[in-house]
Image 1 (cartoon, rainbow, N blue to C red):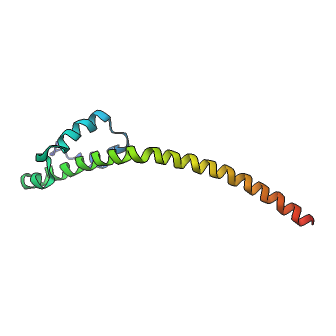
Image 2 (image 1 turned 45 degrees about the vertical axis):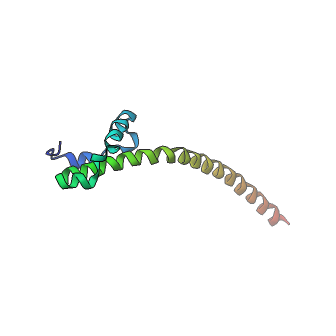
Image 3 (image 1 turned 45 degrees about the horizontal axis):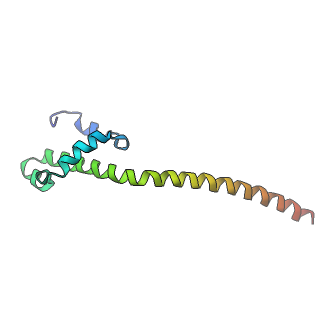
Length: 103
C-alpha cells in the first residue's frame, strides 16, 4: 500500500463526502486504539504517520459532515424561500414606482 506510486493521488482524490459507514466504523476502531496515536506511529515510520493522520482526519471529517449536512440543507431551503420573497418584493417595488411616477 505505502509503496503504491499513485497512493498520494488516491488520497487526494478520495471522495470524503461519500464514505461508506462500514468503512468509517472500521476506521473508528483503529482511531480509538491507543496504539494508533500519530506520535507513536511517527517513531516507527513517517509514511505510516502520514497515513495515520489522514485516516484520523477522514473519520473526524465524516463526523462533522454528518452534523453540518442537515444545516446546509436547511440553509439552501431558507435561501430559496428568501429569493422567492425577494422576487415578490421587487415586483411590488416596481408597481409602487409606477404608481409614484403617475402621481
